[in-house]
Image (cartoon, rainbow, N blue to C red; front, side, top):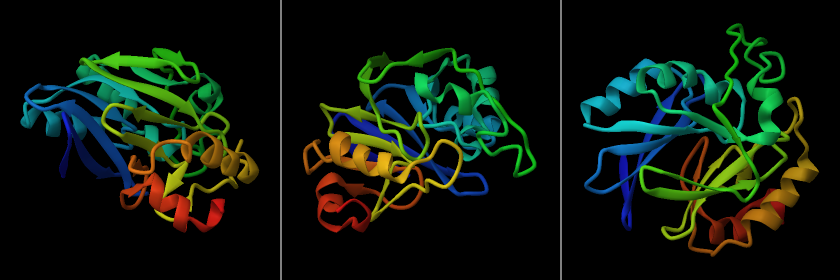
Length: 214
């Protein structure tokens, strides 16, 4: 699926045992993409995009849980694209027990090429987004905000009328509620939210109908 939002296009692949939403963002008329959360099968991701004439230039992680990183190392190997994550997620990215991959029988770690800071802007393939730290689902969970196009890649912080689970390592429901209210609900109501699982939504809709953060 590919959705056009102004100048940007957003594609989605659903991969892995948790049916994770993996997004790729690119400008219309170009072939360079930013890929978010390669959930699994990095070789499949690479070949699928290659068939569409697209090339991965950067890999951004919203958090380090196994179902969002299992395809990272292979995709980096094949594409040559660097991996980025929020600096507070180093522990999950680099520890198979903490990121739950060990418990589900497929231990996996990833060492990003660069850890980003809260509020840091990053430009890849002539596309700029800003990291918004949203601790709660994990201590280092984050979202990526494309201000000009009104797009938020939300990972497992905010879902349609729900939020991410907080019962795994470093999770905190109180922190998650604060993150959504103080970091995301201040964005324009029309901001399109692309979550790590489930359907798309908007900030305005969640402010009205999300029972977890009222």
